[in-house]
Image (cartoon, rainbow, N blue to C red; front, side, top):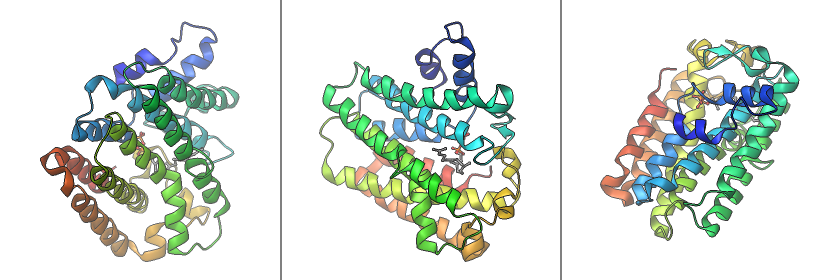
Length: 281
Ligand code: GRG
């Protein structure tokens, strides 16, 4: 993943060097690469050719990196640390971080549009799915709902809707892009993968909220308790900690059940579900 990203990101020696350095700083050498792993594991599960998976995995990670750079800005979450190092706007400056996020997003679509290991139809479909997942009905929309929810009480369905957009949509897109790297995947398998990704997408956020409450926020580069200070709703706040843990467990079981039509080919996806839901930081 590091090599694939490194070779696709503009060199820091190329003008505008400062912007390119910021894009590389925000993307390389950090992060769990959960979304890229989902692209590769799904691609392998459906028998996609190896060479067809790097571009979608990079595109997803670049959209994710862009979202983190923007999310860390003072006008959003105002974080100083990300992935164990200063956030992009701290290491560079706010304007550069804003532009780096913008350019990472464009770079993601450029990579998909130019990928010769994919057919034109595959590229177009992937671009459409990723654009929808990242856009106003997906991640950016979820972030807008999140920003507007400070100090308000959300119902559980409203909280789930927000997270399905904000973090779930990109996780869902990671699985879909991996599946689309092979042409003509059986509808039954696609449905199984969609169910799997919806379950782990939500479980990812519940786990994140639980980790925040249990004090691991610092390792994620967040300011511990900041969400609570702003009165933002979280799963443990709305349902209680033990109920939130039980919900994550149920979603884990649902994710594993969904993989049944893939047989042994779903083994790595099953392991990833465990990693996402049982992670400790
Ligand atoms: C700014 C348009 C825009 C969107 C931001 C996803 C998002 C929307 C903000 C991230 C805020 C956040 C920290 C949410 C908690 C869940 C989450 C996405 C954590 C970060 O993802 P990881 O844990 O990060 O996969 P790494 O660093 O491992 O890649």
